[in-house]
Image (cartoon, rainbow, N blue to C red):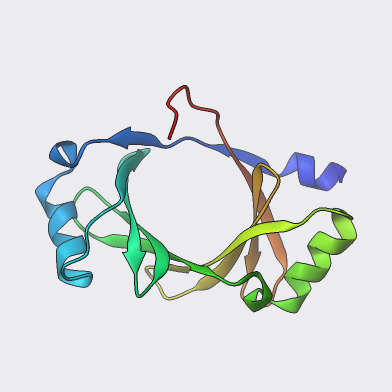
Length: 143
């Protein structure tokens, strides 16, 4: 558990209105996901994230300000996580349940997985090896 605390990172996303999103970002989403309405837009550091449903799956796409898709995250069933990832959580967080899971593909095609446990996201590589823990910073905005 000490190792887990040492690798925790904080992430902070800021909600933005669609009017504040650069045209290149909106065009990238429109081209890749034709006809899909965005559920919401957020700004993460200098990049933009669009969240929406696609093929009945919750999807989020991280896009650079110039319109390059950097990462795609698609919700998956918890059982679709690599066995090693599930084993890691069961061993290191006994009694805790995985709330949600996602498959993440970066712009080079490298796949990783995310498991939400409690208030944190645990990131694993394709084989299920633990990479890092991410904790989203609390925001005063209510969803």
